[in-house]
Image (cartoon, rainbow, N blue to C red; front, top):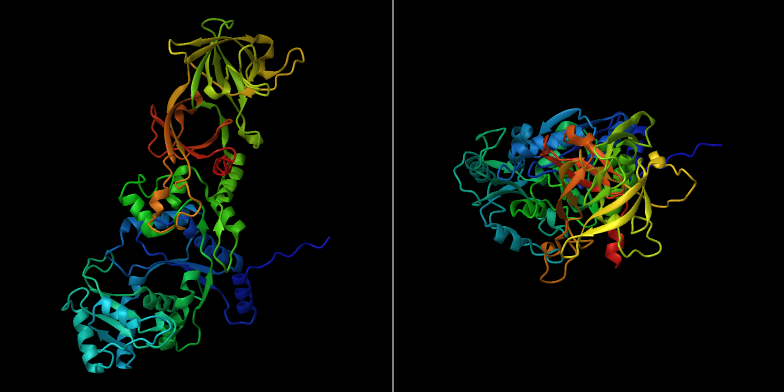
Amino acid sequence: MEEKKETLNFIEQIITNDLETGKHKQIITRFPPEPNGYLHIGHAKSICLNFGLKETFNGKTNLRFDDTNPSKEEVEYVNSIIDDVHWLGFEYDNLFYASDYFQQIYEWAVMLIREGKAYVDEQTPEQISEQRTNPTVPGIESPFRNRSVEENLRIFQEMKDGKHDEGSMVLRAKVDMNSPNMHMRDPIMYRIIKKHHDRTGDKWCIYPMYDYAHGQSDYIEGITHSICTLEFEVHRPLYEWFLDQIDTTGKRPRQIEFARLNVSYTVMSKRKLLELVTNKYVSGWDDPRMPTISGLRRRGYTPESIRNFAERIGVAKRENMIDVGLLEFFIREDLNKRANRVMAVLDPLKVVITNYPDGQTEQLDSGNNPEDETAGTRKVNFSKEIFIEREDFMEDAPAKFFRLKPGGEVRLRNAYFVKCNEVIKDKNGNITELHCTYDPDSKGGQSPDGRKVKGTIHWVDSKTCIDAEVRLYDRLFTKENPDDLAENETYLDYLNPDSLKTITAKVEKSLESVNPGDKFQFERKGYFCVDKNSAPGKLVFNRTVTLKDSWSKIATN
């Protein structure tokens, strides 16, 4: 049978053609984040794409920080981005910063001024915006557009020397004030920012705009394919125009746009994510409800699950909304293979096994992971008193309730059959404990006489179990698209009040020596990860995801 050939996406087709025609001998891509926040799942898709192209075509990928605005950028963000790239499993060939090229970019700006293609504009930002008008109306030229080259050079030097205030003037490229593309209407190249820069110190007080610095940085690094998201498509003519002014080799980067990632029940805007953090709607950038890579990591997501998710959704030319359930599918699939099974009771109800010997404790064998033969087994303590989930008992149970009920029998996972004989209540009628009997011949959950017991429930031993803080995380927003708003609404109106519930659970003794980042399946309840703030004697678990997608049922009711 002929092996099916894998279909290339449109970016891979372009690169394949460039290599086959000899346009490039080797491809070089880049991932160029601005260090003004933490990376999110959308950035993860871009990282996987750029580094994936490197692997597919045996090329190179640079990590380059677009550090052109010191008023918004922090070393904390730089370090977190580097950590995120490594955590996802990728290695960059070079680590660069746009600030590495400030001198060259400045010299090119001076060259454009000398050629009459750039000028200093002393108007306010509001005046500049008004004069650009709109795509159907010709723009209005700045009164400073035709000042002499000598005057522009002098004032631009004064800007560089710190002789003018922030916001008092900018350097603009002289392109086309009548272009239907608003980005071509004399775009700003430099603005004054009098802030200390973490890498260049106080050497510069003028900083290049993204549209000017980005393409020039690509050119300096020899980037062959500049992969960016779809909103930069309208920026491409300007990207090309700036390259036209400096390219003498004919070997220039090609910008290719793809659809950015939009995931349901969350927001991707850095501004909105920053607002959530600043106003304490979440605990920080790595809050497990956040779509940041650090938040997903803290919640218990694995690099493999995110890479598999990115590969599955592929590369598209049109914007669309990806159901967060697909991301959850991939973490379930991954953790099903790698996470050991343990027993934890999230809402404990005591069960006293009245015919079990007083003072006796036995150790029962329990498999760690049926999906992994090498995972082995562990010993689980069992004694006269245990805890079960409160929802696993129903006093007035319907016919098809196969868990514990008065007079009913269930199988305790890896232990025995137990039968409920008595329900103990407090003075308010609340159930406080159950009295049951066990069948000593049913050890290991085997039926001694062939009788059928349909229900199997999990449990923990009351003598040796450990209290643990368990954080039950859910989706941060109740609306599928929090950015799709009616008049007078904000995305904050749809914050999910139940996105975090904190409870005290009972977990089996084997978990007393776990480490932050360890991942487990709590049998019948979901996948959980040990939080970074967990410590011996004070265990903290974050719910990564439930065993099944229960949200879709809630949303349709």
